[in-house]
Every structure is written in structure tokens, then in C-alpha cells.
Amino acid sequence: MTPESTARISAATLARRLGPEPVDAAGPAYRLLAHRIRSAVLDGRLAVTSGLPSERDLASGLQLSRTTVAAAYTLLRDEGWLDSRRGSGSRLRLPETGGPPRTTGDIGPAGLFGYPGSTGDEIDLSVASLPAPEGTLERIAAAAVADLPAYAAGGGYAPFGLPVLRQAIADHYSAAGLATTAEQILVTNGGQHAFTLALQELSVPGDRVMIECPTYPVALDAIRAARRIPGPIGLPGPGQLEDTSAPWDADLIAATMRQTAPRLAYLIPDFQNPTGALMDGPTRARIVEAAQASNTILLIDESFRDVPFPGHGALPPRMGSFDDGHRVLTLGSLSKSVWGGLRIGWLRGAPAVINRLAATRALGDMSGPVLEQLMAAHFLADPTAALDQQSRRLADGAAVLTAELAAARPEWKVSHPRGGASLWVALPGPFATELARSAHAVGVRIAPGPRFGPDGTMESYLRLPFTQPADKLVSGIRRLSAVADRAAAARLSDVPGWLT
Image (cartoon, rainbow, N blue to C red; front, side, top):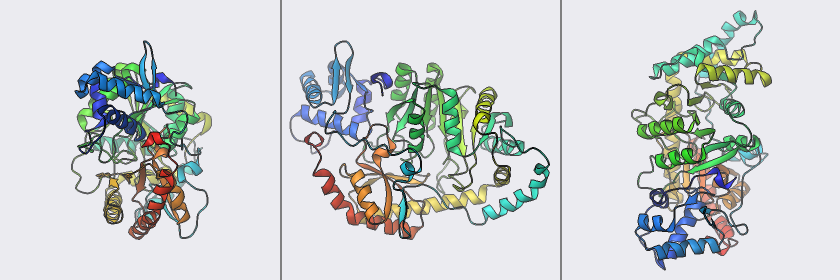
């Protein structure tokens, strides 16, 4: 990542990123400030290479003396956390030695699922994928097979997707309050196919792609593989803000777009993966406005929007509702809300953009499977009962996982989502990767925090999906708890002094 790939943040933004000063803080004020800045970097709240405000501005913003801020910056510089150049200010960095492991994972299944191979007793808490709703696949498969003879008489190629499915997806948006035509829809083979297609066509190697930090790791893999530059925007985790339901900082996002002009911004505003956060309406409007000003295309992932928990209340308007038709490209999928084996995704955007994407798609993938598209069309004709079943499953899983964590590890802080498929868990120390290794030995797969960011930070975090049956969730947490203290001791025993 180049130093220019993230923005210079204001004193007010830095103060929000740091959060409240610890009530039991002791020691010199400059050391406390340096520690808070280091911690924010390690937790992903501050992106590596972010430009810090001037000493004068930060002193005013935090109501500290300029001498205190200068001493904190000097300490960070001496320890390798800050790079200062005359005329360019100071930018955050990771120390060249002794830093946290840059756990990026392998691209592909090994990176996504943690460890290759499995055992019969293994509990997989690394993948946020639901079983299919009962009876649904059988019903829509039978209906699709009945329709198939009419399609078998033709050639079978439909690079845009079957017209019946494009119309069904458009109607799904229109029924939810966002008027959409079939010409605005491109059907893909799952959400990841939609993402990589948009990334390939709408950016070139070397372009900046703004991402949340943490974010969906396979999208991050695709950005790296395509030789684009990920520009992270930190999202505070559990316990870091008074209001953890809306962690997006609209001012920071707008400033980053203005200063770095990313070609694309990949955001997950609806039950964000992995934090489960839900972006409010005013923040959505502000981000779309900033994207219009910076000529940035917003690639908005709505994979979990259709499965909020029961009783969640009204959702904010879709991101596309705030757009003039040219800045927002929406990604949707049935693979998260219905079943991972139903490889149907789509993109919603301006017809001209959809035409470009379809032409690019045809170069490597002439068309999707007709039978699965017919199944998806029948599903979208009457999705309510099945989606309600999946929503209840997710809500029940979240309740079981939250209760078991509270009983087994009350010192672990957890998010409290109202939808989505996972908890974002803050550990009491930076031992997530060591815990993942130890968990594998007791038959549990987990994804440590560094897997969800570009810089090897977030060692104090885990993503724990609640898509497994209740008995497996309980057993998995008990196994994790049994090795957690050992993992914490093993990790902390070899951490250099700059982490403490």
C-alpha cells in the first residue's frame, strides 16, 4: 500500500477513533496518548498509513498541551509507529520488526475456510453459511424442472441472465421501495462472481479501492489478486464506542474520498460482515453525496439485507435510494440468505453499466446455469416464508452464541447485531491467531481478526458465525474456552515490548 492510499484525518476524527480516555489510566499523559494511538491501529480503528493531524491541531482537539502531543508523536516515531517528513506531516505505519503477524491467508478455499481437511468431530465456526430452509429447495427445483423443456428448445445462453429472473429480481427491489427495471439487473454465479466482475471492469491495476476494516476477507483477496490498492476505513469494535450500532464515520469517509479519490468503494451497510453493524439513513446519504463529488463508484454489498432478525423494525432505505443512478452499484445474492449451494447473485446499476459488465462477463463466462436461474425466479416469486425461517434461525443462533460466550468467557466483548450471520468478538489481548491454531487442535475452526483486514492488525478480534446448530455452537465455544488461556499465554509470551 502506498502512503497516499489513505487520508489525513482531522483532530476531531482522531478523537472519535481513539474513544474515551480510560478512567483508570495512569502514567505520563504523553505515554497514554501514544498507547491509545497504537491500540487504535492494532484494533483497526485507524488505518495504517493514515496521516495524523498536526501537533497544534491535536492538542486543541484533545485539550492537551502541545508539549504532550509532541512527546507522544516522538515516542511513536522512535518506536517505529510514525513516519514524519518535513512538509508532509506524520503518517502511521507498522514497525518493521516485532510487529503483529501479517496474517493474510491464502487466496481461495484454504484462506477462506482456515485449515484444509476436516474431521468428523470438527465444528466449523469460520464460515457464515446457513443450511437451506426446509422444503424450499425441493419446491423450487420441482417448479424449475417443469419449466425446463421450454428453455431446452433454445441455445441456453443468456449473458445478462434469464429474462424471467432479471424481472423477478427487479420486482424484488421495486416491492421494497426502490423502483427497478430488468435492464438494471445482471445475473451472476453468486455474489463473489458479481464482485470480481465489477472490480475487473470498473477499475484497473493500481487503482485504490476503499474498504471497511474489518471487511469480508474473500473480497479483500480479490482486490489483492487484481493488484488494486485496498484503502481501509476503520470501524470501531465492541466496547470502543458508546453507540456501536453505527460505527461508520461519514466525515472520515468523505475526507478520504476527497483526498485519495478511490476508483471504487466496497461497503457492506446492511449487517456488515463481520461486525453485523447497520448503517443509518443519514450516513448513507452522506456517503453517496461524497462519492458523487469524488467520482467514486460505490459497490454496495446487500447479501444479508433480506435476513434481519424478527422484530428488528424498519430498515434504512437501500443505498441506491440516495443515488441519481450513476454512483451506486448494488450486489445481491441468494447464497447467504437462502443456501450457499444456490449460486445465484446479481448486480443492480445503471443500464449502461450493466451492458459493460455483461460484455466483460461473456469473455470468461458465457452464461449461468438455466436450471438454477429458474429455481431462483420461483423462489423470488414467493420468498417470505423461507426468508422468515432463515431470519429466525439466525436470531436463535445469535442468542445461543451470545449466551454461551457470556457464561464461558464474560471478559470477551461481543457485538449485538440485529441481523446478519456473525458476532465480532473483542478478546482481552492480541492472541486471535494463536487461538485459531489452538482451536484447530481441539476440532474447531475459527477465523482470527487479521484475516479481515489488509495490514495484519486486529489480533484482538475474532469473527464467530452463528449459522451452526445450537449444540455445535455451545460445544464449539466450550472447546474454545478450554484452550483460550493457553493461547493467550503463548501469544503474549513472545510479543515484543512495544505492544504493552
